[in-house]
Amino acid sequence: MRYYAMENIGHVTLPNVPKGDEEIAILTPNIDYFDEVDYDSRSQIVSDRLKQLIELYMPEYYFMPVAFITDDRQNHCVFWRFKPPPAKDYNALYRSDGVISHIAFSSDHRPIIFTAKSPKGIESIAVRMAVTESTLCRGILGVKFTEILNIVE
Image 1 (spheres, rainbow, N blue to C red):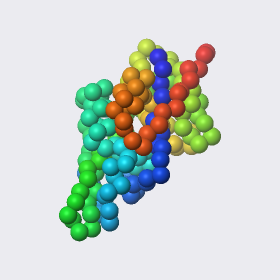
Image 2: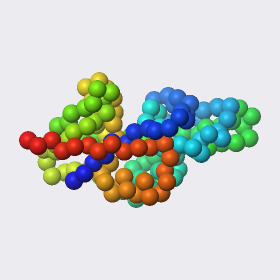
Image 3: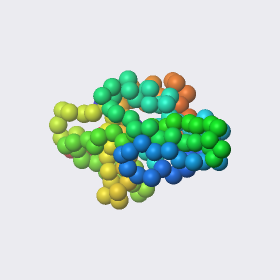
């Protein structure tokens, strides 16, 4: 089964979202550039478009809203916290930047989407090829996929 690491791409960076599992609203001077990005790994948030796609593969996952509101409170944009559950029973290797690069599962349970945490504390989101293809077909912005190679044991 082929997996890919989700990574950020592009020049747009969203305001940093504090860690936690609660709903949050963040004041920001401008939300025009939010249309140019659907994924921010640093804050673990996804746009509504990417959320709807992920729900096809993880219908039971609960997304927590993160609202960005302009300083004048005239406009707003909602993103969603996305931190999939960690994989179980696997061995992995990581690149020097902490992103997962190789994986071998010890059991037959192989999730569609999961999180893998490197020894450096970097969390990578890994997705199966079907999720990757669906994402690319829908023109989701600000995300790239790097193949995760299987470890031969």
